[in-house]
Image (cartoon, rainbow, N blue to C red; front, side, top):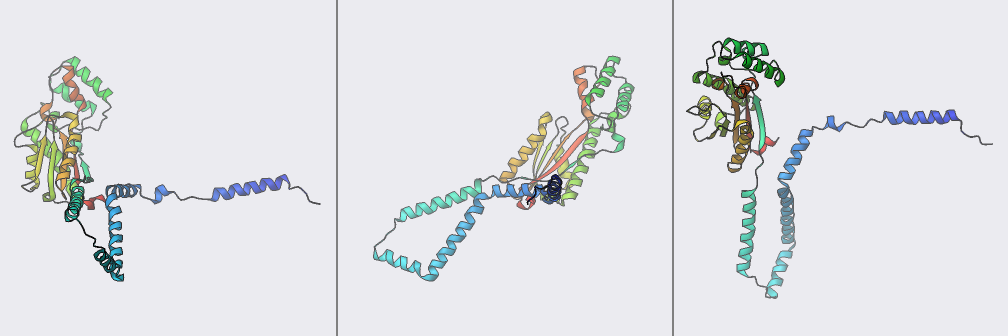
Length: 317
C-alpha cells in the first residue's frame, strides 16, 4: 500500500533545492568586462559603420568577379553581349562613374572626425598657498582697507560658501600689504600653467612640437604678449601652431575653448590640441567695501587645467 510523502521529506527537499539554487553563482560581468572598452568599441562601430558594411560587400563582389573570370563566365557574357548587339551609352556610364566617385569623395571629406580626450592635468598648489578661513580673514584685516561691516560680510560669505579649508590663493594676495602687480600676476600664471602642461606632456609622452592647436582662456588677465605666446615660448612649440587666447568670457570660457578645439580638429587631421583653462587672481583683488564686488574675493580661488585632445585614431584605444 502506497504511503503519502511525509512533511519532513517535503521540507528537506525544498531546503535542498533552495540551497542548490543559492549555490548557483552567475559571473559578475561588471567586474570581468572593462566597460570603458565596451563604450569605446561601440563608439568606433558607430563612427565607421558605413565603412564596415561597404568593405565586406566590395570584397565579396571582387571575389565573385574573380570566380566568374576563372570559370569563363565573364567571357561567355561578353560574347552574348556581342551576339545580341548590346551597346552602352558612353555618356550615361561616365556620369554614373563620376557620381559614384563624387559620393565617395564627399563621404570621406565631409564626415565628422571623432575627437578623443588623450589626458588631462589639474593644478595642485604648494601648501604655502593654502588660504584657510582664519588666514583669509587675517589678511583682510591686516591690509586695513575694509570697514568692520565689510569684514563681517566677508566672514559670513566664507562660512556659507562651502569652499572648505583647502583652497588656494596666490602669495601676492596673502602678504601684508598685498602686492598686486603685473609682474606677480605673470608669476602666478607661470606657476599655475607651466607645471600642469609639463606634467601632462610627461604623462602622455607627447612632444610639444607635435601639438598643432593651442587654445588658452583666462578672462581677467590679458597681457601683451599674450598668455598663449608665453606657453608657446616656454615649451618651444612649433612656429606654425594655431594659437587662440580667449578673454572676457567668464565661466563659459572653458566649454567654449573645448568646442573651439573640437571644431579646429575637424579641419586639421592627425594632430593634437592643447586646451588650457585658468583664471588670475593677483591683479583682480578688490580692496573696497562694495558687497557685490567683495563676493569674488570670497568665492574665487586659484585653479587651472590642461587638456590634450586629438583626432588621431590610435588615441581611441
